[in-house]
Image 1 (cartoon, rainbow, N blue to C red):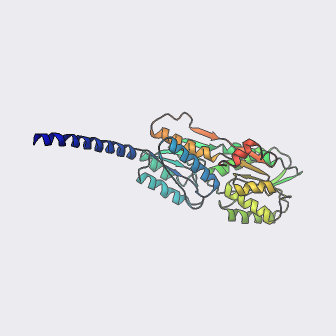
Image 2: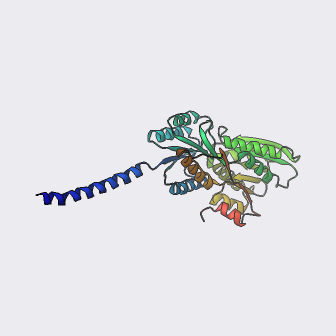
Image 3: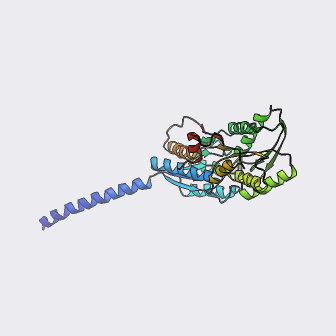
Length: 322
């Protein structure tokens, strides 16, 4: 009888060890850190590149990454709901690109109060709880756009600015940089700004109205992917490629095609992949109380024209995943 018991005991020990191992493994899985990457949109080429960078960092740092955003870049209320949901579901960090500089402040403050680490990328939010801000130096990018504007050889420059939501800080900083960059240029005759929805159709329709009312307008500048496409389509439909010098932000297969065929003269290309990657990397550091040495990180911006678009550095920026 004791012999049987002695034989059975090791079996229980083995089972206990196995169960202990499974429990430890399950605990490790449960303790894997989570970051919610909440963007202005998930549909644009820009934010798909952000997602790719965030997921690459998530893999490297062994983190679970949720990537989400509203259906359009005007819907800050859905962004706020996503922030609250991330807090409720126990996310350790939120990597956030704000549609509205002020309208998401309260939701971000509440998330930080609940212990969630906040990292800002691309478009800033009005909160001192953000541990690190990562993105384009928008003022300098605006000055880069000014340089592209001044490449227009016309004697007088009548400039139209097609900006997006006035409550989004990066658009306003880009316009500020643009205006500063052309402020001492004697060829500038006048500047007119319109603010449009961050959508292709609205930007196209409003641009056509602007050009119809101002037939002497010979320069257009705009500041994000959707408005860039809208302005490009307006130029194409009005057959003004040879008459209007167009400077736009961001790149996708359509806008690169417009650069080749002449509807667009310059692209200001950002580095959204780096924003996503560095955003998650900083989130990992904040979660694990690793000091973040730089509280503001500016990612690279490149001016691409028909003259330089086939250079290696420009091709890498335009076709990030090729």
